Image (cartoon, rainbow, N blue to C red; front, top):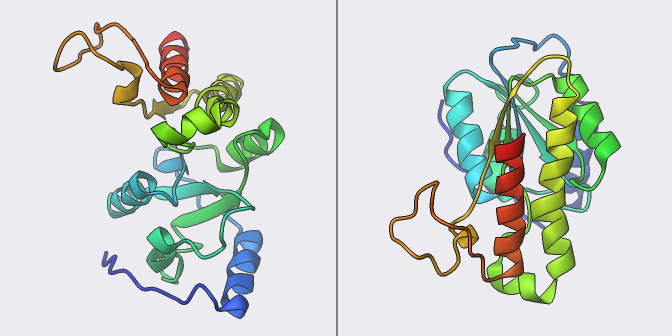
Length: 202
């Protein structure tokens, strides 16, 4: 596939309206190959968009969760959304918020993914000191919320949690391993350490 980027003006209000309408009108029914269906949180961010492209190249059906409060024009995946051979056929977007268990649960039931990649959340270390509560909610509690929803699904699925070197803080060794003590030095690092330990427990 050719994923050459195509950009559209952020000021095109008509275009932004059409994007929202197309997200709401998608119908993924019939695109169900249980072994090749994946769900990505944070698909509009750098890592999520690259992962989405890679999985599409490998023949996956890719579903992504996007927030209603996000800008409708999502530049990192806009070239995919604008491709009629991809969007609505092998790429689908769903409105959702990491704080909304009901919506997240409904999306998982509808999509029935074989793999879930959790990449979303506030990831700015400095900002986490200004907004520690929201950082812990997005990076920590959201992971717990997703793990609980995954645990309730009738069919098991693979869950990928994206951790961070911030969980080690002032690490006592380099490079770090899975046995390196967790010594986070920021609210973000603490939240990611909590989420990483949760993924290990579940």
